[in-house]
Length: 266
Ligand code: ARG
Image: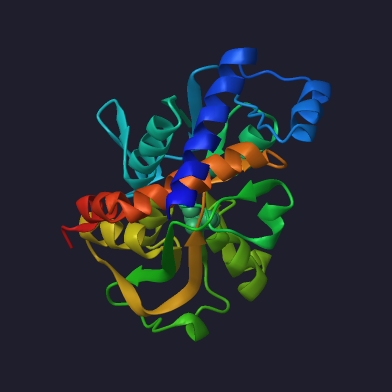
């Protein structure tokens, strides 16, 4: 326990130092050098800031409220940033632009209720998982669709680039899947009878069912999801610092507190 605390403090201190020393930019050479000495080098995109790429169309994890972006991921990343002595900055982009933002070094973190998948691991490194979820199938209230097995040949709405998109394309084929830039657009198409079902992560699904009349969520789960924060491939220092901060937030009870705050009204 003591050791762990120390490791966390050291990781954070080293991150702060390398940020101060080089303004977040390091040459490959100096990074290799400090690695050899066993020191950390954090490639932060912008000095003093922790830039989080997200897609704020996924309540309660991230959503717009007035001019603000709020949600579980926002609060978790703000708390992580605080532990690292950095200020959180949010970049709201299309879901399928999040990984490119991080991979190309425009953002430090991907935090978007993003499920860890083998494919995504090719382009990004993932933190320890901080939440689990399932996906649900939404249908019109009077629909005859009762489960996954009734979906073949049907029109299924998904948010482009999400695991709903990937899994339903795999399960039911390209012709069945209708892609939208936001899950809410798929839900609206469903309520207007333009498509037969929507697949979306359960907490978001529940928010949509509360908001939109005439639709319901089926009881059975479509898939299992485990959310993690993504960092640029090979940025082990940031990854370790994020994992250490997440572990602290968990043991402090802060993670649960944040989740409860956004999910209590059900
Ligand atoms: N968990 C799903 C995935 O990883 C959906 C995430 C959607 N998140 C969002 N912020 N729109 O693909």
